[in-house]
Length: 132
Image (cartoon, rainbow, N blue to C red; front, side):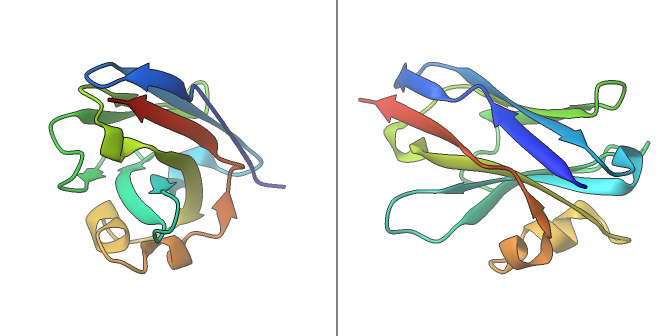
């Protein structure tokens, strides 16, 4: 059974930092793409960053987080991290990690509006609140 467990969310002031973790189990971690998505109240779920857990470590970032967020993978721990710096109030959302197997680069999967529909396994989400 695929399981994804997010942690690390919380309340932070604008300009601050948080690191989210996504601990994965139940699948061949090295073969999957792992994505971070977020959903703010009243908005669609959006893909913000993805990583290939294979040896190439291919990554993708949405323009809204590029230069501020960094995704990384520790395959020994089956864990993907999202380091979030220079947080803004508009980053406030529930953050989810998701996983699935793809044979294409992460950008092809994660950069489209329908990206959430491509991922079959999801964590429960963790709340990130950025105060102004």
